[in-house]
Structures are given as structure tokens and as C-alpha cells.
Image 1 (cartoon, rainbow, N blue to C red):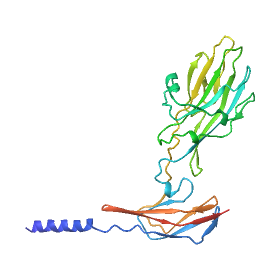
Image 2 (image 1 turned 60 degrees about the vertical axis):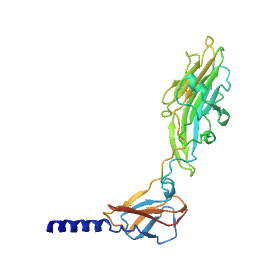
Image 3 (image 1 turned 90 degrees about the vertical axis):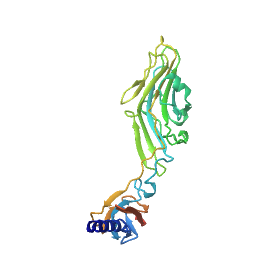
Image 4 (image 1 turned 180 degrees about the horizontal axis):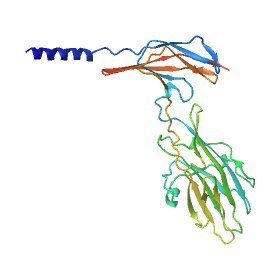
Length: 294
């Protein structure tokens, strides 16, 4: 009997513990000024002691409002440089894009895809070397499907004649640009995943190296030529969620935090707080506005 009473008492105590109120993750944040100069140290003073604090500065890449973003209206901007020589020079190298190509690099699947000729958006060599294309925005050609890929291609065509043109793509860069203007390089000449496919004249095809793309062209005995070199697919709409800086956990105490903003602007830093116990969790946040002058 006594043993049963003892067990019931222990269970009652455990039940009362389980019902223990989770501490509110309250935090009040202040600064000693409303504005600072770029490069100054901003000291954030804390009142309250939540178990965990994660800091979002409000800068690009550390924006609290974008911490859960998976997709966005990003732009893909490319630039390259070219050389053309030999024979009668004309515009027989085309810049193409597709957002429905399936990534199978053969004549059948390339033909079935929808390719848009955007050669007029770029500058090509007329005989000089290392001619820069300028920056070409591919945002108008990005699919509205979040998970779709965008492919970039160079298409070379020439006819039988004493000497076909020799084209060299010297450099290539692709940058993803977020709606906020953050730039991330997603490909260079060496990492663009180039694959070549010949439609006509298999004896003259694109040569791919880590430093350039080369189409040698044919001589008098060679027939008409049609050759493609295509990048890997770029998932343009995919975004990397913004991240915060973990400042403290339940085992530490923090009364202030110092941070330096290097660029002028009006920032809205957020301190995300949480109390995570065995019986549940509570979350909160503290916001403040900081002006950074030049």
C-alpha cells in the first residue's frame, strides 16, 4: 500500500513538472544612438535573457524576412568574349536559350526543345580578339516554374566554301542576381558543364576545354556545318535562404552585442529569440532600426 502511494506521489510530481510554464523568450534591444557612420561599431544592449538569440543584420544575405525563401524572381546574367577569323566573316555564331530543354544532349531532344535566338542582345567579334559581349540579362526567358532549368547554347553554322569561319569563345561567366541585387557566380567557362552536339559534318565539332570553346571550321572539301555547344541547366529561381548569426544558447548569458555595418543605408536588424524546453517551445523577436551614414 505504502509502495503504491509512493509511486502515485512521484507520478504527480512528474505531471506537475511537465506542466511547468515555458519561459517567454522576451528581449528588448536598444542602442546608444539612432545613427552611425559606416565602419562604426554599433552596440546593441539587451534587456531580457531568452534561451537562444539569432541575429539578422538586415544586410543582403542576412535579412530576417527572407530566411525561409526558397524561390525568387532572380535574374541570370551572362557575359562572354569571342574571336572570329578566317574566311569571309559573318554572323554565323548564334546565342540561344531554352527553358524547356530536357538536358539530353542529342539532335532529337535539342530539336524538340524551344530555343530562342538572342544573338542581338550580345556583341560578337568581327575579327578582333577578346571582344566582350556585354552583360546579357536572361530574366525574360526564365520559366515561371520554380524548379525549371534555363540552358544557354552557342550554335555554329556554315556552308561549304574554301574556308569556313573559325570561332573561339574565350571567356564565359554566369551570375545569378537576386531581386535585392545580390550577385552570385554560378558558372565560369570551366564549370558551365558544356556538352557539344553535331547536326551536320561530324568531322568538325566544338572542342571544349576549361579555358575556351573552339569551333575550327572546315576547308574546301568539308560540307555544311551545324554544331551546338550547350551549358548545364541553371535553376535560376532557386534561392539560398538568408541566414542569421547564432549569438547565444541556454548555457550562456549575453548583455550586449557589437556589430559593424560597412555600407551606408537604413537597416532593420532582427534578433530572433526562442525558449525550447522538453515540454514545448516559444519563439519571439526583437526589432530595431539603425541608420548608417557615409
